[in-house]
Image (tube, rainbow, N blue to C red; front, side):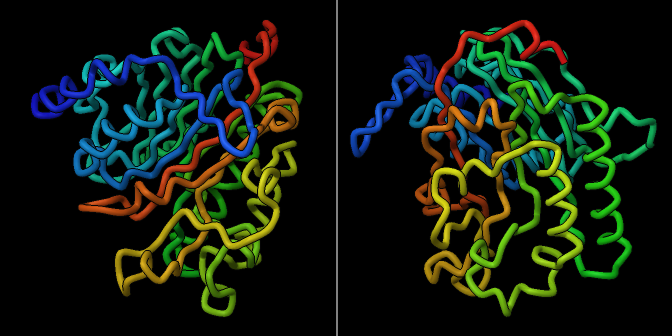
Length: 303
């Protein structure tokens, strides 16, 4: 990863500035911390874009999906040079998730990879960690796509979601500050796709997939974007084909889900469409949420 290190140093100084506190329409975010999620669709391919985005947006926490590299190749030192601690759960060529947090918040603690249920699943799709100074437990989640309804991969998707709900019941507490960020490969409602008739029976919108996501939400989670922006067509993914992005033929499958104790402090959620533009973008845009700071309790960060 020597090439990544050389490029990272070019933005090192600017990335060590204090976290951004955007203010718009009278909304003061100076007393907030931000958590973002981004399916980068190959960290190697998107490295320069990631460096620039971190320097510009300076999230306190960033969850990545589809890093598509093994742990040994993950650029931990390069990211530290940019001002971020990082933990990853990767694999060769496919999948892979990571959590980045600003160094001033301390090293991520109580890091867990996978479902912790004894199932020998070879796919790296879940990593969870506590960010001590923020008093929040964070998960980076990459739900299987499913390919086609009725296929083995779709059944795997539904089983994975059921296992994830069991994981939440076993490992997490809905009364504590928990945020689950990632690519869920499910659009929760028809308002989350550009054309419901086109997507209705697909793996993204099928009732069985939406029901499975609903059971995740029933743990005690809130879709923060819809909490802040209940109406309107807002998308996070646009296919590379068919001029989908210029035509805004998108879907919303990247979500920041939070327990109510945290969601109640959510001030703003935005999709950064600019990051989907330009040369060699990911087909996903980053999603970033701002939460009012609160002095963390011991219980908030221990489980």
